Amino acid sequence: MPQIFHPAMNTVARLTVFGAAFGVVGTIVLFYEYSRSPFQTEVNVVREQPVQFSHEHHSGQLGIDCRYCHTTVENGPFANIPPTHTCMSCHSQIWADSPMLKPVRDSLASGEPLRWERVHDLPDFAYFEHGIHIQKGVGCASCHGRVDEMPLTWKAEPLTMEWCLDCHRHPETHLRPRSEIFNMEYSLPEREQNMVGKRLVREYGVQSGYYLTNCTVCHR
Picture (cartoon, helix red, strand yellow):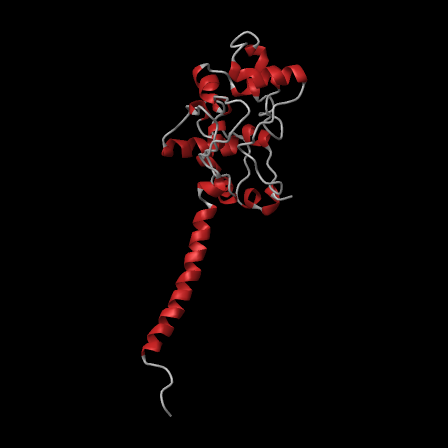
């Protein structure tokens, strides 16, 4: 029987099989990398806002405490966006006629709140309680980064499930005394942090292990 295919087709067949396998693996790797890239997580991406508010100026340079504007951070389920009259409590006297603050003045006059673009926005299927994290010793900078150094606000951490679980598995690496929660400059060497963190886990009654990593903790 005459040979139908040229012997070189064996090489072509092998290359096709290996190429398909590498293509599948490459697609998976590409999807994995994309899901963790700034295109998906929006880390370090600045969003356009109605007013170009600077945390660097207000928190870093002027030393305004986070709780002055975000009044519900310690006990509420979420950190509130300050109402317009909070802004105008200062800006009715300072920079009162600044063109940059016209949207704020218009908002106060009309009673229509400013439409801020959320920077840290978890999906609806993920339950997050802001107050309990503060009470258990998680500092603002652990999730939000050094906002006191941000001229415009961006997301410092990906807020993925993997990122959250890493903290839930090892809470001692992030906990700090409650007196330092709002101190953006607080930092300890790794070994000292682990020692302090383990003490705070016991002192603050932080549950670890299965409870903190159970699906129902965040997905309810």
